[in-house]
Image 1 (cartoon, one colour):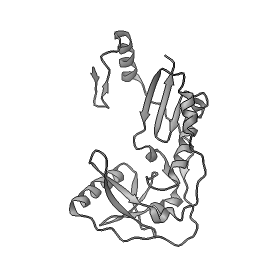
Image 2: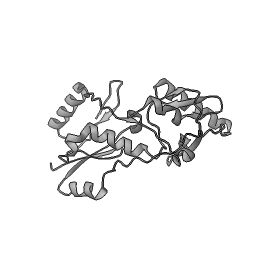
Image 3: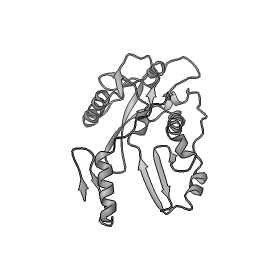
Image 4: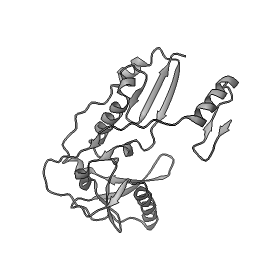
Length: 214
């Protein structure tokens, strides 16, 4: 069974009982997500103040169209903004496993200058231990998880990138910076700390497992 009202489509499996099906339908049609604000931002600190600035990488015209479409979407959604930063990394277009194209920023030179964030990531063995007595597992993959985290205004200039026709900087945390995983885990833990401490929610980056005994 499929439920859709212009929002995301939900598919309820055929093995779900009528009683549980009704409960799921009621939940999906009436639930309003709660908003929680945590004061976690991406702060970038460098080992020196010498800017890194690349000229735009020359891309095939087909890839330029892909970059333009992606950047336009980012601007529309408030992910990036035009800038005139003294820093600039290059854009690359890579193929994903499904052969679709993905626009990425090559931050390798900038990463060499980043001061490391030592906030710990979860231990996989600890997560596996918490799953031992569970029989039902709900798995969630947070869409564009990093974009939930704001970039501190003073740090935005470091995230700058150049395309074939303009320069932008990130307002939301980009992929590719070596300090972003630690910042993201700090953000996730701040949001779900009370659930993580009880092993109700087990996150690892943007992948979340919710184990249950029944």
